[in-house]
Length: 197
Image 1 (cartoon, rainbow, N blue to C red):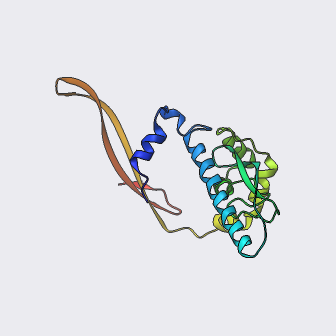
Image 2 (cartoon, rainbow, N blue to C red; image 1 turned 30 degrees about the vertical axis):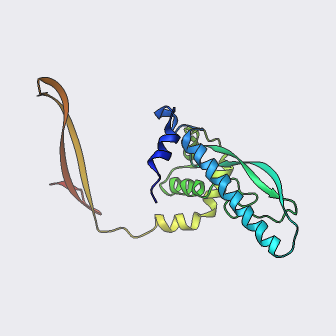
Image 3 (spheres, rainbow, N blue to C red; image 1 turned 45 degrees about the vertical axis):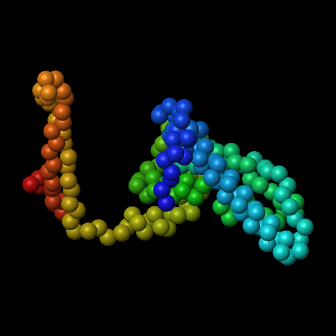
């Protein structure tokens, strides 16, 4: 499903390009707005099902919840119901991280990064997490990580190298910098030295 261009123009109006992906930028605002909208829809569905069952349940405001995403911290307004029977599926009670956050930590761990290196990487994005949290996430998937690290390797891995050299070229009466690209490939076999072709 494509997003309407007019809607995109409206979202981007008056924003600086560097602000779009920055902390608390447009992407974070969209994550917050979409999450809150889906939670409200979940509550509507819950209240409708309880009304059909004859229970007199209704909305009861919201509560704040801080969630860790892959790029920042978001404070969401989680809707509540009077009877306290609403259990959201998108963001479960007591859940403090978006699902992709754990996947990113696991991916970095599987690639050989230590807990301190992962923490330092996340701090680049303004996300302060404790080493204990990272250990908890990695311990939950340790078996899958060990299996991935011990997987059998293929006999051959093709590699392609791209290089460019910048040269000055006269073009339409002006001297401009242009890139000349070169691609080469190598055959890499396990246990042998790769040779350029």
